[in-house]
Length: 360
Image 1 (tube, rainbow, N blue to C red):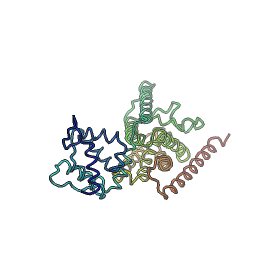
Image 2 (tube, rainbow, N blue to C red):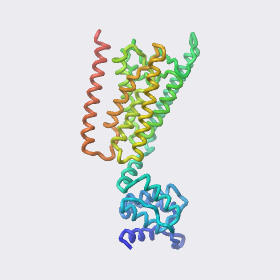
Image 3 (tube, rainbow, N blue to C red):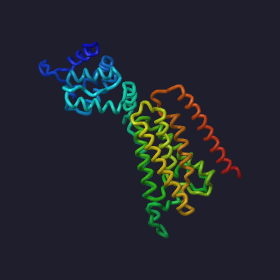
Image 4 (tube, rainbow, N blue to C red):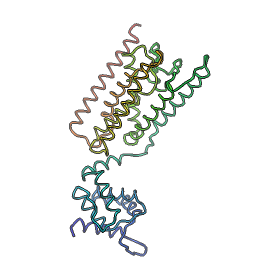
């Protein structure tokens, strides 16, 4: 018996217990989960990777049991850096699990990295920023629909609008001196499709980010994307009304790209995540272009806000999102993104200030 097998046998003997000291040759997954969570030194004895695999197995099948041969096979395969199929005679459950984990997590170091990223998901504090923001946006949209449908003349709000442009929230190109409009236009939407798409995307993408990177980072990225959108539209499309939270939504999409780049080795299915985010970005761009060139002049939607929101989301994603394992080149990238972001922000604010107040 190897040293590792001997160690696992000793650990198993401590875990294998029953009433009145009776030993039955099995460890229940319920007991295994409790012992792994309550015994930090266990990870030091058998290794963090193996202890995490045991915990994952226990959580997946609370009512199952583990035998000593299964534990030794898992320990040997983890120490060798790969998980192979379990040998015959140890049951189909061990065989299926080993094969599944081998496919999902190819080697020992990669398994350790990716489990470390999964461990970062937490609901403490609860991810409430985007939930509360979405509720506020829905409330404002319903209020605007009521105003339009009961107005004189009454207007029917359909999938494509119209947006309510007479209120104090929408970005009005003729009232740029009302500075708050550069931010509050995110509460105004042009039609049911517009708000439903934005709400779904920001919740689908934002909540996982909040759970890992915490709400204040997501708030900074989202609001920066919104403001960047209005600053850009004010300069590039100065006659266009701006409605919707697409600048912030696009910032979240790009922030996810930054997150995948920064935590590629720690993240499971990173390539699939990247493809999903690019697909969402393509759909959002298509919707923005459609609105820009098909709606009436006063309610046109500028896709410049989407582009600028994406740029800000990518830059701020590199700057403020958590990087679980920082490499030297990433530090250089961090400084480059910070200087680029500050340069673009100061330039756009200064340019807009000159355009708005320069004549007075």
